Length: 257
Image (cartoon, rainbow, N blue to C red; front, top):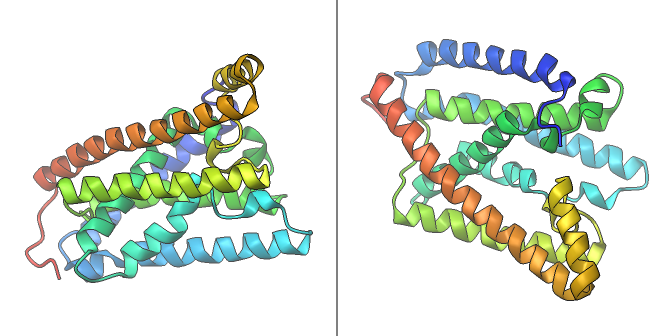
C-alpha cells in the first residue's frame, strides 16, 4: 500500500508549495478586506469546479456514459458545498461555511497523507493526454487550495454544537444515498461497494466468504459510514484548532460584511 508514489512526490509537493505562496500573497492583498471581498477567490474556484464537472459529464456522455461519473463520490460533495459557501448569504451561513471547511479539510488531510488513494499515479502521468486524468488532478488540487484559502482568509464559520451536528447529519445522509446507489448500480461510489485500500478489501472478501454476501456487505457499508463520521469528527476538531490559530496569528478584519 503505497501512500505517495514518485509521480505524486514530483507534482503534488511543488503544487502545495505554490499554493502556500499564493495564499500568503492573497492574504496580504485581501486579508483585511470585508468578508464579501475575501470570498471572491472562493467564488472564482467554485465556478471553475462547476465548469470542470460540466466538462467531465459532457465527455462521459459523448463516450456512452460511465456510471462511475455520477457525482456520488465523497469528493462530489465539493460540487455543492464550495459554491454554496461561496455564494450563499443567510441565516445558515455559519453552518454552511463550517461544514464546507471540514469537508475540504478532510480532502486536504487525505491528500497530504495518502494522495495515491485520491488519484493514482496514472492520472498524474496522463494529466496532459487524458481529460479525466486532467479533471481528477485539477479538481482535487483546487479543493486543497480552497482549504488553505479558507484558513488564510479566515472564511470558516463557527464550531459549536449546531455546526458539529450539521456536519454529522450531512455525511450520514450522503453516505446513505451513496451506499444505496452503489449497491443498486454495482458501482463503487465513495468506496461503498468495495474498498480501494487493499487490507480493508481483503477483510471484506474474507467476511463475504465466512458470512455470505449480504450480511458481510451490510457490515462493510456500516463500517465505512462509521469511518466517515469518525474521520469528519477528527477533521472538525483539527479545523477548529487551525481556525483558532489563524485567528490568533493573522490580522483580524474589522468589517466582516
